[in-house]
Length: 494
Image (tube, rainbow, N blue to C red):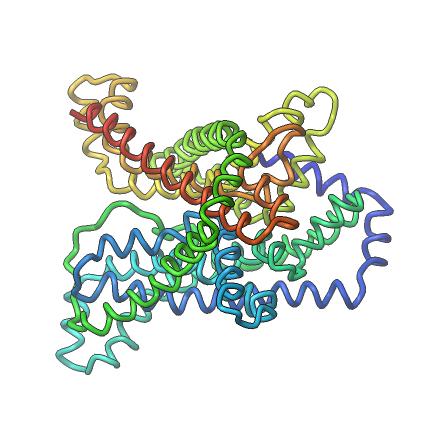
């Protein structure tokens, strides 16, 4: 996973023509395109962090009903492909006869991408809020009022989570390809993709990618300590008592309004557009996508299994042996923009003795594992940190061997985290467009690729129907795997 990146950039940097041609290609258009991409990513990261802070506080710190349901609903945009939101909101403007130029602009890209990544910010910040003991706040409230307590106690304690949220969403946003590509807004990632795929100018594509890589690395290493220790997507709780603030009525109104905007409106619009003319578009879309189901599921399953295995190994060495090299390598690959990572895999594996990887599913599995193993490692590591070492020590004293210790104690205890990392990796794999469109072998039909290639010239109803089917299939598969794996692990634990 890491060797293709090293090979690609070392080979490029050692070429004399690389720097000369690259520097000659830099003009005002490219610089403005880079600034536009940075501005979009900054705006998305800022908005996502602010809204995520508000939603996280409401869900984790105010009394209310249906909290678990709300959390699940809010996660839907994060666990579906970003272009689904883009198609839905384009349909919304088309359906109500609104000015479509707004959605096809920088503002539209910022709005849709923020809807996708707000749940990630909510998880990170909500987890930090959930780990603050109520005694700190109650002691402060004996001396100062609530606004001062928020400013002097809560804000400093969640500052690492805010920074982590901003940096991670920035990296995700500047790497995002599907939303600006669908809306016709040129950004730096679409320029690199065009340079590589349409003009076959590999050298300039790599040169231009250096700027995005440097920006992402600068953001990453500026806050590497916070990101390395961030408890996002953690399944466990520390068990500390938290303080609940009584503002459930107004908070409930705000959060249900946001759920309406981010979840219900897009889905209702897709349903309406799909069945507006009696369901003909939906049936046609189903026939288009039917051949892609098996290959999409197969590729996503394989990528998820590899991601879990790699993530488990990295997490185990990091937590139990304080050996962090594997986790840091996964973090570096995770930071690389998707299009750039796809280019490096193509350049490295497109050679004779590696053709069995390049021309088959192997290159896609490597790409999926490279991009999403870091998330699996984080989930499993956070769960592993909550297993007391005394549990393993007691087992060893009782004479249990290493294999039995691993299979009968560690794996059952970690089963919820393993299942969660598998499901999340599967969701990301089946909805991934930027990496898949770079790597998929000729003759292979995959759902996101099929939708993206047809939607350019298809009627609006057909595009909506295809997008809706992708969402429903993804949701159905996730529910099936969740219940099957939950039943399996419950039986194993018993």
